[in-house]
Image 1: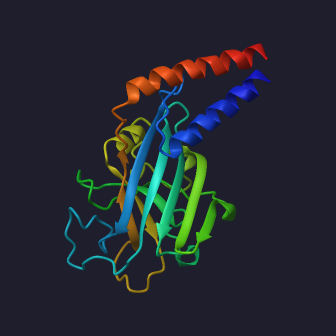
Image 2: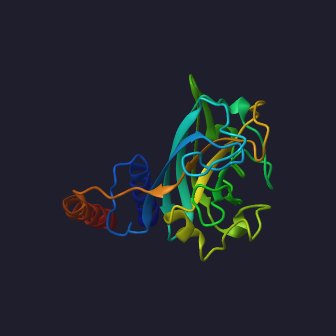
Length: 227
């Protein structure tokens, strides 16, 4: 019973952090907040703000944002992706697993470059993980593995390797790409919007928050043990 209650407490903490409330409590130091803003990509999949493409930018008004919670103990991600201007019926299956939404590595040492798929966010997803909205769609999942063996047909050379995947997520060398059936896109890789992933800065009030919340966390766990 104690283990079940502890799991529920930890799950609640992760959910609160994924909403952006920044609550790193005792025993939760392995949780790291990440974020990305998605905008139309170059037609070669690169970032128009830092890389030029002779074919220009994808003709799209779509945009989006993603919040991710990286657990470096379990090597998993919780994430929530919100997209406007694209519906789920517009998504295109693409890549080694024939799936539409991936985390890619940037190529050539430039975070704006296009690079191979490293973590397949939509591999094994259920239809219930996707929800159409009046202006687009939402896509949310928990406990998605970032390890190579759990990426289906993604191979080493795409994935940086288990000893480097966390570093690539934290260094800004990873981006999210949404593949669609946009008929106006002529070039590879048919990605409509993309966003570089970066770590969310901790709030300036973190020390005071941490002291109070750590005390609360210890209290809850002791009370759970006594019950």
